[in-house]
Amino acid sequence: MQKGNDFRQKVLKASLALIEEGGLDRLSMREAARKAGVSHQTPYYFFGDREAILAAIAGEGFTKLGQSLMRAAAQAGSEPIKAVEAIGRAYVDFALRHPAHFQAMFRADAVPLERYPEARKREDEAFGKLLEGIDKAFSNQPAEVRRIIAIASWAMVHGLATLILEGSLARKLGIPRARQRQVANEVIGTFTRLFAKNGM
Image 1 (cartoon, helix red, strand yellow):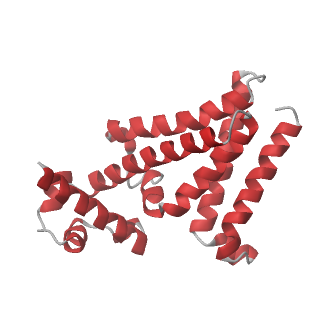
Image 2 (cartoon, helix red, strand yellow):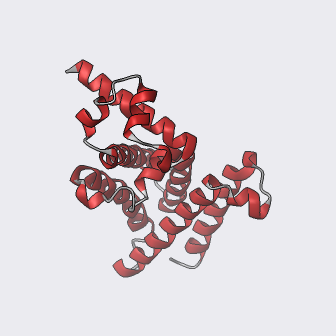
């Protein structure tokens, strides 16, 4: 059993490396087997097809994301607004540290999560952490307002992560890679303070 799990992990690790090298289009069953150093049939044995590999990567990514958001909120202390800011920073940090996971998690055309209940469950758990932070920070607001804030917060941090990963901040604004994480943190801080200042 352990040996079988080792082979499965080899295929996943190789698949992640391929995605990091050339995006989701770089991944194929044959290439995953070659890079993992296993037979051509091994990926099929554990996953069935390419989509199933991507679903496994997405599920693993959502688990890691949820853990990152939970740690960030805990470390931020008892002030809810600081927890929201910390969660936003953790989201972007996760994307930059796990770009291959991030791609698989948010490409519905490549990974239709409705076909993979376990991955979908992990997605729901991860975003539950984000919603929990928003609910605590803006507990004085009606549920619909909290929902809008959650959507705006998610869109902002997801957009920041995507702009960095795709190189747009460097191309369009000339922000060097070494400063992009700092700029993202500044944007998140400003965004959060504006919400707090306006009584939201």
